[in-house]
Image (cartoon, rainbow, N blue to C red; front, side, top):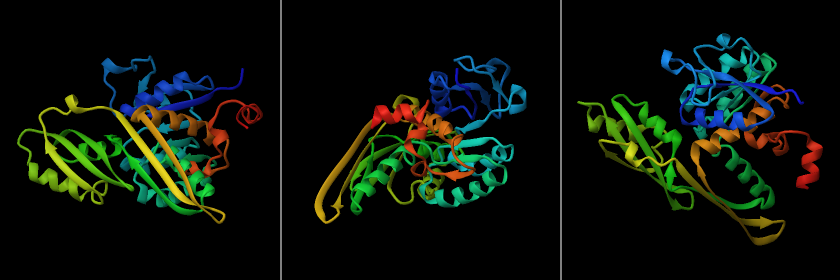
Length: 301
């Protein structure tokens, strides 16, 4: 049997749990466990039986790759710690404007320690980035519009949850067309918190500052939460000198499930690539798949 890839999950929210399911379903991976900052005596194992520990040393085996299922703003400091151990990393960093700078910094760490980082390996940025790349190759001139939703944005929701005095939050993305979006943010506050202060903090946050954003304060966020999301991508352009070429891509998903699955595929690819840091458009799609290239070429081509 082919040697299995030893993996660890870092963090254990919705995406961490989804990544665990994807790893346990993949025949070419061995999940060593989950690393969390806080682990109580009552939760030494996940619901699927994976051990939860404070540090990777407790697992007794060094992983080959770490899936960083952390809030995006924690990735720039967390990823280098793993790369310095010679362990490849995969993350779903989703602050689009910060991706080039993060790629440069992680590339320096990865090359210095002979390992690999694949960043922004979610669905957008991530798998949608690969689709946009293909559409650009098909129609070099033209415009691409990516329309999200309606659905829950994981990154936006987490960003609100990290604001002081926010007990829970949900950010729903509503597509307005031509790549424009409305953000509907539902917030449950700690007792005594200032609604105005939290509202201002949300509207100043880079996650929201470029979009029409509406903030509502509610008692219970759980009754509103639905992890479903969607994307409609369209490109109209020119192939050679032929105009009016039109392509569209549609997908309706469970947000954490697809993000976790893409991270697992990227973890597989990370161990097949030279040292450095990469985004998904830089990864050969065939390297995201298990097994041997020849078999996939015969099947897919």
